[in-house]
View: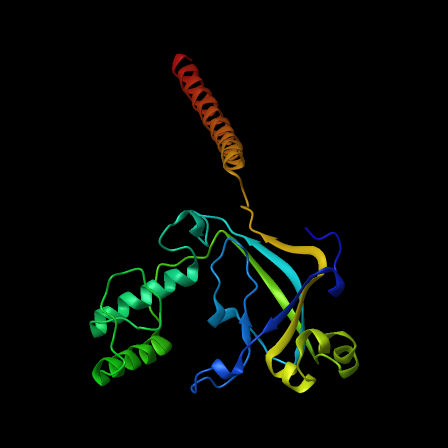
Length: 256
């Protein structure tokens, strides 16, 4: 648990890569890290941060929390943590898209995860790949009707990145040269430093609240009914009084 904010109070990592082991199709050398809530699944493709060798990357965080209301309120949020098969809105969308892929093409996108035991499209089958491309283009234009509401609790981190060349020559020669047994040029090609900290311990929270609670609804309803019913009864009694006066007047005339 952190007691204060600042770059010197956070997590510090030195990462090592082996460029020689990268395959020829890799267009970059480095790492990709994800900062996420422990209750959420990591999504490196959608929310990852690239870390490059030879640099110190300082990641400053601020936390934001959103609490939504379930049905019958507008957002109709759900708790994905209670669902063993769909643990996030992203996973729900992926499952929905995979079902749509299977319906249109008879197979599912091989690069997307799925919990269903469905046939995966073969990358060597041009017919299946062209079908998936057509489905993807159609989804981009028209979208897909997926029942994947917002989660009732969302926690995310706003990230601010700064980078500097690392290590400096003086710092490397002072201590790291002996332990690594490499020259600074070789060391920079295979090492990166990451510092992760909170810029502030304050948290921004957005919370939905109903305009009226259930108890307040019945209270207001009772008050309104009492008001209008009271007015209605007054009008009825006034009418009865006028009617009785009219009847008495007629009876008095008949007798005289």
